Amino acid sequence: MKYSKNIVRLLALSVFFITASCQTRVVSPAKPMQDNSIKLYEKYSVQTKDAKIQKIQILKIDATKIYGKNKAGEMVEIEKNEVREIKKPDYLLSAIIALAAIAAVIFVPI
Image 1 (cartoon, rainbow, N blue to C red):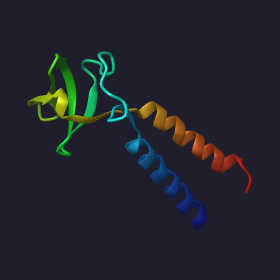
Image 2: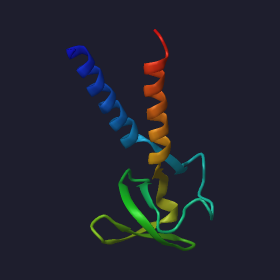
Image 3: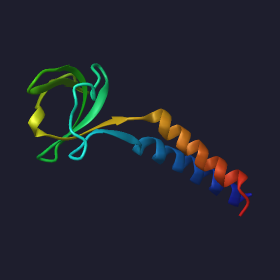
């Protein structure tokens, strides 16, 4: 019986980590920024060239800057040419992946 409790804990922990770590890369060095790649009023993680990561809600984009609001409510301005990478959290996709992994463990005989 103790063995099954450990499996349940391990599966719950796995689902948590898969859900927490899954993000979609919207902008990267190999995938340059397009006009329609970032949606307004969505939350993104923006990494600049000096390796700082800021989690912001995008409010406005113009030709040279990205304007947003961080969790503390402060306004943030980031130069477009300083952006290295932008990621968007994708919880639905990560939940589907986690459920598929659990189903594979349960239903596929070893």
